[in-house]
Image 1 (cartoon, helix red, strand yellow):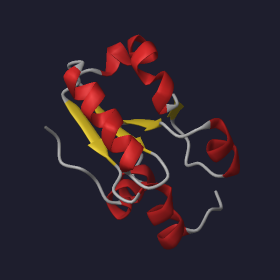
Image 2 (cartoon, one colour):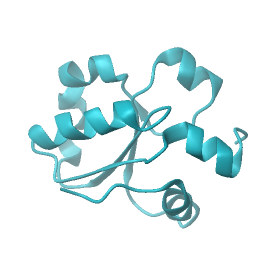
Image 3 (cartoon, helix red, strand yellow):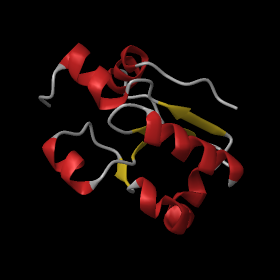
Image 4 (tube, helix red, strand yellow):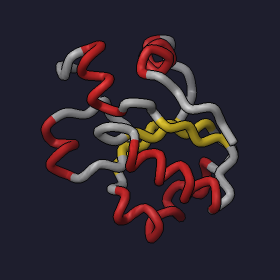
Length: 104
């Protein structure tokens, strides 16, 4: 089970162009209002669309939502499906906005 990640570490990884998969599991209206990129699969669709992520089973996958709750569930679903390195963004976009604002 992979260690969860804080927004500061994620921002550093993004700034350094590190190789990882970023997954947004929020709803479309939340993503439209503010996002930091990555793949977009709402949590309610994740189980049915897990195959789209199959090639990333061994990769580092960082999952985010508004507060970290839905992405925590997504992490559990993905680990049960055999993903080896899934990390939940602690505090989600609320924490990101507190630290970095909502601008791109």
